[in-house]
Length: 501
Image (cartoon, rainbow, N blue to C red; front, side):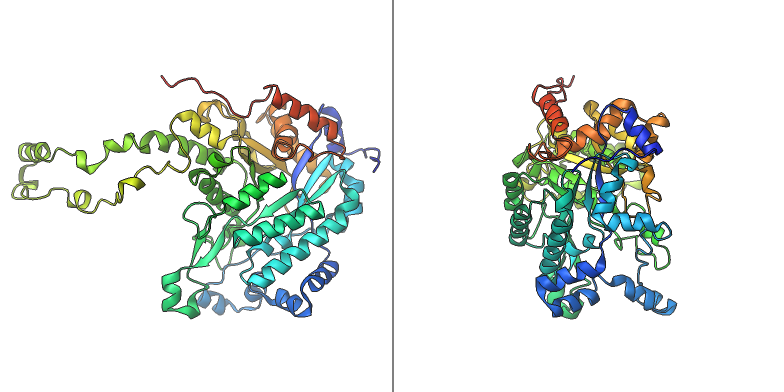
């Protein structure tokens, strides 16, 4: 399709000023419900459609809205998301629902290309009912493939991929690949019943759950899923919600529940992918975590780096109870303990450590065994090249991704820009590029940082997995230039770190 003449907006001016494209890695479709519901009916029948409308995983907000204040307290019903979409600006609301209108406005938004995640589809892959979950994901994917096919040179939608079992994930991956969809939005966790408790109280099984992170201690081996992603050239992305977890269960404040919830869900799967050794076994596979920002990722990267220095198998000898000189300890207690230790120096002085210290089988002592961390550069190479972090334009923490002085080993984490168009975070679509560029104007990031944020990193994420990702789009030649730079070492993904002194 031809590109319309840019409309005079501040976002268009910013796009004109910079010498590179601006890619939006996380906008949102606000589904046109009359059509979507038809797709669900077509995929599963009228009975499935009715179950979708009333399922606790998709209609949970109805329960809170129709409960009395007393019932909310009695059952501790967390306040869910409410009024998430633009309405006063009807033009923007329609833009998020109608691909043709969005396509016509990309220039005034200052965007060259956008990846769109579903809105209602955020919940689809987490539906507990096995049949309903799979049918609903299939319907969302068929719907988005159909409505955006005509606009593929500048817009691509993300497909919903359920992860309750590796088999259903691979089946849907094959389906979306046949549909021509290039981006997937996978469930970042699965709630599963705790088997022992479920047997004792089966009627309470859906409430007594554990969070399967799909990698570490999982109920299934998900390596076939990651292998399928490599085979299809698809980068797994996660946009799961952490609402109603732990402390995020206020019955009155959605804001209390909302702040940090995407980051919490992202940290869980990211940490598991690293410690579970997925990035070791699949070094070319790239993962993205949407809308949680990068502050949590900087903290996680630093924590992993620091923990390895303190809790590597070699360093664990410093705290192995077997290495305690018990006679020297007893002698020091006699000399310096006074009345505090007098009469208490017979027998084992550290029973909690020597009799029940929790070390378990020596084969389990090395908690880095799955990811194979032997040197500090291994931490960098298993984390930095493989992970990408979606940040909204007005997120002031984004600059931390590019702080090579703060981040261990000079790391620049792969932050990617997400406009969140279609949701309340972007109150005026014409300000998409304006918000993305605020970090430069406020002195928080450089022009180079901005270039990586909105251009280089999104291409590394998708074209790094599939060199043909941008083929046939308006960014085909730009993507080729970035990939050529990667191949010549201009923008290294993995680096040799100087030996530690």
